[in-house]
Image (cartoon, rainbow, N blue to C red; front, side, top):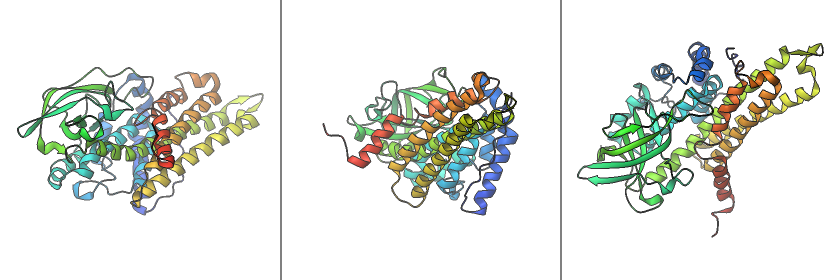
Length: 390
């Protein structure tokens, strides 16, 4: 059964331009993404042509400077675009979030020359990015990464393996964190590595519970040579760049989570109104009505939380704690709401004939990526009570 068209969310947007942008995104989502979403996810097909269309429409660089082809949209607007896309197909919403994360280092810490040379192709030239921080032995403890970059004249030679890389094997560029100095966070540097660099290869994509259309793979760097002109930021600044990128990236994950939760809520409400039991719609029964009310409240609360964090970011104020809170709450909400949606549909919810089971499988990964929700709790507590004593 094809996915239902999501009910338009009544959004509070800051400008007429933002309202037009959301209308454009909804049109693309319904015409180009929704009709094939279920079939392509089931087949594990990545919709590269959709990302080419998003690039042509100027949607791959929304929060970045217009000087380089970006949309100069506030995060408050960009995140609602992500939510709209994720509600139709998480592979697309999350893919846009990851691409934005991959471009962050260069857009924020790159030199003017680097930005002029590379950003236009990233933002409007049809390129697709990936963010390479995690490794097989360093996930949550990212500062212990082992991939090494060794200076050789005017180049750096990168050797190591990155893990859990969204768009691994299909990306046109990777923002790679590698060790150039001492152990720990201060010895890490960021590099912009072309996807076709000699010595770079990808393992077979991981076989995942959900999000099957989005390839996740290990990336092997076997003596990959990168000129110093592709070093992003100063030597030893890479971990600070990575953490700064993740603060913004976590807001992207939060928005995607609310998109998935909204889609599940819409499915549950529509099914409950149409399903007859005991001579009346099951939406007439108080137990189910209360369940739907709780689901809707959780979705609205998550949306308000990620938007509040985005507005802090847009105002130039600290937002790391709020970003961690939004990622934690919104992804837990997505897991709860999608699970409840399966329950509303009963036996049908457990079948692939309806999208509720897919939403539930996809929601799970959002509690893990870009910092598990246990890590988010550590981040929040550190802001409240200071670092742990040992």
